[in-house]
Image (tube, rainbow, N blue to C red; front, side, top):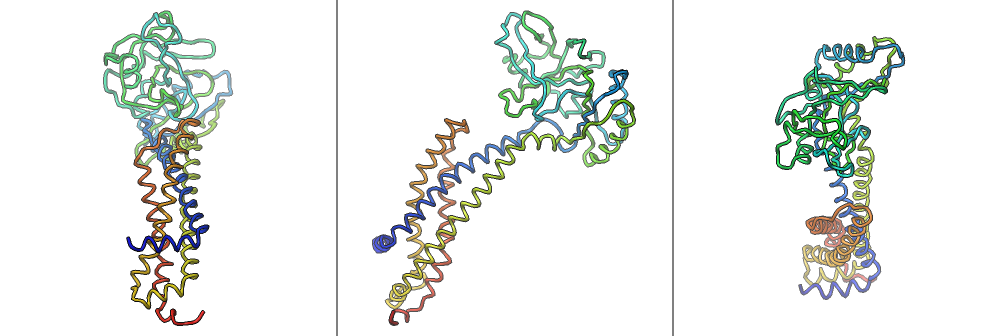
Length: 404
């Protein structure tokens, strides 16, 4: 404690350098803490479970250009061929993929008298009886879709299925009392198009990760005949590449139809989250860069201070100061500068978070981020000054007797 006064007076001789380092530390704390918070948010967003066996699922996007082909029979034949491929667990045709960024959303009514503005929205996936297993979903209540319950949907004919499966989140939204199984809901207002819930599965995301109803989904027993069949195939673990190759050979053997693209679920999800992934990488680079620049600034100031005070340090050594005393002197001096910057940065961090939350709805920064960020920068600053401090401690006492 007795060193604080002399150290403070010494700092006043180089106020500009100390002030610049303190401001740099404040800026670093402000930006790094908020950047780390946003990284954590985006990472949690990306890592949310989709409900799908992500590592072993692939989608085949196809297009029918021969208008004479019987699309319903084509889909039957394709699915039969895909399911016969060695290593395939299940396959289905569908209209979309979870977390793909493109899909179908619809409204549903738990009361036939409800107006259209009180409908409950959900993500719709048209599947057959293997849709549940293809998407690796687990029934928590009820039963699966039966083949005789599947209807077709085309440009000229729209049939509403009489039964369907819902996610637990959609079931809870429709019937908060927990009695969704067996209930009838309506696809349109005024009691039109009734459908009965025959099964409830655990969880699956809809196509839009930013949706407020991301976990409210449903599997509809429908086959879509729009000329662009999409097949989803789930493979046994470790056999996805072999399955893709064999499935492509099977699908490419049909004239009048082409395979537009083949995309694994992981690739599809990565494309959807490309903006979030880029943001995480950018902010991580900002944190590393700011931390490095701040550390170099502290090293530079301390090195300059040692060079300027070599004779003073030699005098202290001649008067009995140990090497440890010299190292401690520079650590305390740097600690005072750092603490000043951290206090200013604390206010800056809260202010920046308030701005980001009010303007971009990033959320309130958890309080524990503040001491964690301060501790990180404190340790960084002390490590940065350690090398110049050790250099200062090696200055010999004899230097005090030499003329300048």
